[in-house]
Length: 452
Image (cartoon, rainbow, N blue to C red):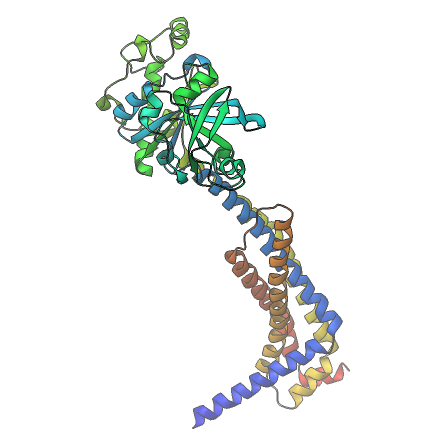
């Protein structure tokens, strides 16, 4: 019974302190509103800026992921070291971590469709392209190895090309003309989105053998490979690095080492010369202590531009994600300064309130109010102000993100940012309200009455 009475008394004192705190804020609406505004601006800044950073991070990561998972990009940066398309099959057989690969032939052609005429982007690949780039079809089917071997005039349209060709109707079975040659449409790729997957939605995909004929080339500058898992992709990058170093005569552990003059002449032979014989899979095992970076860069001489670069796109996704996370945190840190300013505003108004309400404090102490009652009252005032500011700031930040998105910014509502901003706002309100609350509760009743 006694414990119940004490609990009821404590609740009554708390309820009275809460009402007095609300009254203290309402009697000075303009001053309280300005303090709330300071906190709200701080919270809105954190929510909106971190939301912009998070939106940018998601957009960049989505762009990389649209290229496919566990994809390995092998690119020749000099025409003298471009790849023979037949090397692709050898690479798949010899590299343990790579399950499939395709030569890549980007080119352009003049397309004619009924009375329309214009230049279009073309991508030449083999039949493994949909699996390598994780790109399904919405209509028809992809070309086969037979189409590739026979240089068949067949084409698969990117989604935007397919949708625009016949006003949304299925174009499969129709024919178009590329550089004067008639091509039959056999499929339409599923959409990837604006700016994703190297703009595949706006391209035409044809067999790479046909694309080489259009481009009047015999070699390719790029190969895309596919691994089963991230671990196998890492393994494939290391093995590929060693293979191409040996092909170019740059691996010191190779049986023969070319002199600079011999190396120069050897690279002109491409990847089909005697120096380019591939080593066996067992020779390409990862040596102890060999780093991943060492095998992904193949320079001709120290400090020169890389002749061939081998890139694991999984690594690019992780690096882009990490870089954008750092940027988001920096934006949040800059915006958090305004929260500090808002907290100082709370301390300022609370100190003013203590000075103005000295008589009230003295009367309450004289009537039996304890120090803890006054302490709770002024702390609640600070929490009221910071709490209202946090709610208003969160709403303002979300509204700001909607405004930014209308102007083309990539935005995302980050619940992590909202949680951090609200927590910091309430914590700063509590911390900056402690000193004024202690000052108010420490004034002796006689001294408080005498000051008036």
